[in-house]
Image (tube, rainbow, N blue to C red; front, side, top):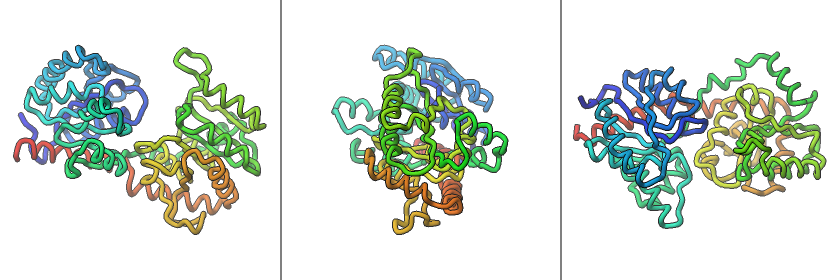
Length: 398
């Protein structure tokens, strides 16, 4: 049976693994949306910590070696995916990563079903072999980009017609990040755990602890900051061997050299990010490379937290800085600075730290409203379901 307009489809989502990350979270969110709409979500992956959540949401998990880039395994996966799609009465094969995309495309062609992909990652423009390999993301009926920047890059690099590119920003659940749901007692306990003292201005960098996320730039910028503050870095300080990572050691050494050791907190992996945002006064995301989207900035804004981000990539679309004449403008949701510019970041940090609580609160509430209007999970899922229906209609000529 083929899905028809007005009915929810059966979707095969193919993703290498189901560990933490934006693509994985979106896979779970679409599983919930498909189930609620009366459709089905079958997820093929090599497993991970989100597997149980997907099953609990009404999805089905099928394990297969789809993370492999081995040509022989990719070839074998064609028949695996084709068989799964036929047995599960799948309407669309949706690849969420480049690794399994070639198998997904060829499997879809083999059984006469539509294929599409979501471009979650950076669009590389070199070398030529990498462009060819990545082009599989654009060889389906449509490709989903998570922001205008990514869509433009897809069109330029892969010479894809604009009408075949759908822009669906990633969403977040604003209810989950609503600070009204956070207990004062929990905030007090977390502040104590992070050694936050009375009247300290709390700067939170909610990112993986890796060099390109810009924590070293932030550390250098904070070293020039005047006033009473606390800097909190999230992210695991250990490498894959379980030892302290080289980058974490470098950050600690530089903090000692600049006299910031007592002001710096390495929070490690933070399971309760809404609580972390409730403790902070400002979120800073100083990425050195353009973020394809920057979901964390959206989540921070949903938590009524003003943000400072790098002026590049998806941040230009998710953080509103309309009125450059006023740092406390009610039109803005945050500030953007040039990637890697320590002096500019210091100046902006000082400007924000000098704002009153009332001014910060006003910006934070504008930020949350901005997210509610543009970047919710509900909106993302609705848009994706509409794309599924459109692809099915176009493919079958309905």
